[in-house]
Image 1: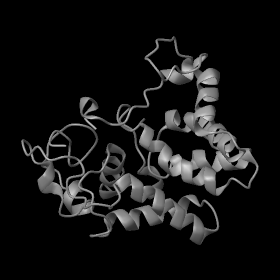
Image 2: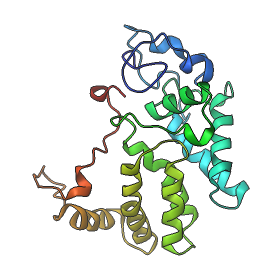
Image 3: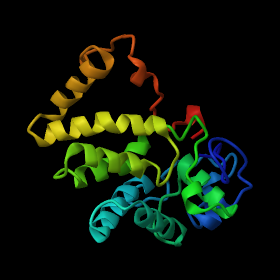
Image 4: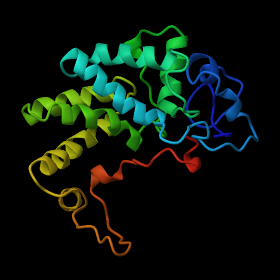
Length: 224
């Protein structure tokens, strides 16, 4: 975390005040160069990470809006993130920092979601759409998928993440119909990668195009 920018995506200076003043209030000291703090060092036992809070936030918004509503969820997101004490996590991923840097620069909210073409195209982008997909499980799948893809755009600009919503939808619906998570994962591997996963040992394969998208978590090697 001590390498991450406090004003924008990825690595950079800790001079900016998006972290500490706009979001993640009072947590900037943990981002100081050379400090060496763990990403979630401020969390107490049982407290959610910020991304866990994103799931809860989406559920609350859907319950009050009677389903997914782009503007409603975005307004809820902004209020939560800018309210001191709303959560206790020290870390905020690149997409949060970019969103609120754009907002601080005066952009309209719908123009605040952004992408650095590296850290934002990450697996945490599926947290909000997963909740939207489950919340729309009683709807026709096409409608639930459309809402879930739109929900990606509430916080980030990532067509790559949106492309994975289709696969996530298929997996979740399979589990809801009675497949185990392992069975759904293997079916997805066959469909997307062209081969089942050997969970007993590593395997090599030539992935299909959808698997070429880098969907890693934003680890230290990427600058987060």
